[in-house]
Length: 164
Image (cartoon, rainbow, N blue to C red; front, side):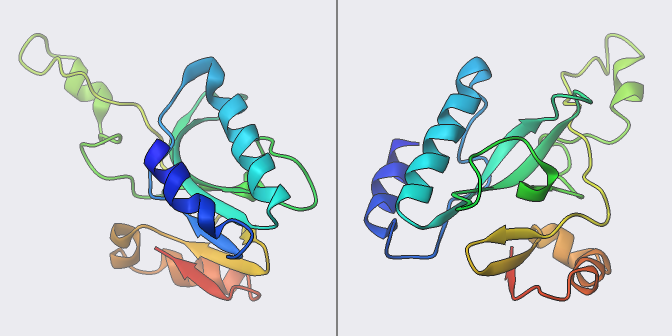
């Protein structure tokens, strides 16, 4: 993570949008929100926005997602809201997401695999805003899977940037 900090620091305040890769912020347990809040504050104080990938857990539903979040909103400080998040609809298979994970755990010991329980994001998701940009966000795999991205763009006519 230090590499991302160091390499993006010169662009804060000069670039409207700084983009970090998927899973740039690893799960840190209780320190996770502190780190996100610190990044949010430093990004906002430099009048930039930052998008980064995180392993994310919804505090209400306890579902886990591979998520892109926006930090640096000039209107409010970081907090868990759907407006700042894009949950991957098609997480990478057999990475954080394994379909039918319950069936793979049942017959011991041959298929007793340590598989993840990451959830799929909704088909239609809230628009993400970063500075003046209205984002349609998708992974390359999601782009190749057809109609979800166009449906999200049609749902949000102000979209002016596709991030993949």
